[in-house]
Length: 534
Image (cartoon, rainbow, N blue to C red):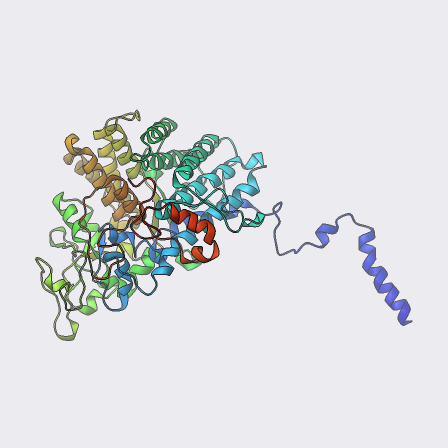
């Protein structure tokens, strides 16, 4: 009986195999998708989020570039001493972690975009998703190379094929490849084909017309990055971008409205809703002076002098005084340690606020307003304002991109003011006000490059796109900034020009890392220049 039962069990186990030719289906984990069943549209929002997140908050930029180019400022004392990386170029306890975050998060975005490309490249019906995948790879990898210089590129993103120690390509070769890939992918976008689902760019909803404009606007930005390194290539691709069709209004801006409740947190909002940060992070004197000099209407939206006293200065909810005339920027490079660099020793120190235990020496300096504190607020990727300002420079340089430098500058200035409205009703400045301001502050042809790039710095800085502010400052040299030479700084008293590679690269990919470092003028440090930074 026992032997018969065993035989029946064996037979029962074999019967399904004898009457089916779908063995693979029977041995597939029903909780997991294959390349044939997985919807690659599901990857797009995570790609977009990771790219935006790589340029926000503690992933490095608010702790580095925001104050390197003197958009923000801090006295870096007490609980928020990690801002020493930015305001004074001084190592903090977590610097090595911070400098790796843009690398890791950026490559995460690029890797997912590469996977989306592989899942769709042989499916003609998904041609738009394939090319958007390429465009997002270009966007992510361009940002990484702008921050670090030579990076893994041709062998990157291919761990599934066994390449886990990729070589570092030169930034020159990377940029030329990125522009060529972007050109082909943008041209191949097809409005008649299926549009992508799950598009996280606000207002895009998979609109291929908008994506084409995005691709060509990104091409313009990358082209203009090369004006000092390869003017001929810059001209060729800037003109190609203009011919293809770049952004034409603020409605084309590419940005993501974050969703903190579901894990998509705005890193800048997370930082500035932390009491130690809201107390320490102020607008720099350079930025506030720039906005006040032109009576810029953005000033009353972005800056406030906190209510008096230490408690109010550390409060997320107590509103300050946003009267433009009362705003005062904090000079970079000071602390609250009582020595020669104590803020009370700065020229024109206005005094503190509060009394007794509630006193603060930095109470009269302007901080970012509540519009920046939302953990579900927007993160800007690329704007019409940037595009118009770059076109103004292109015309100034003699590129055949159409229009006049003055008209493009006016459009860019007005658009930058209007784009602030993404931060909500409290930040809105209507088009009529923005246009009137732009008309009253025209481009001065004799100082065009200075004026254009100072406005680019202010506009990207106000939108908290700090990596872009820094990259364009490196390229253009504007605004002219005075470096901080704080005791113990890591850049020899100069503004950092790049971030060192993550420390893990030296140990895990040492041969290729050493090859890349050998191409840097002064080694893997904060002052070696990337290829296009002449």
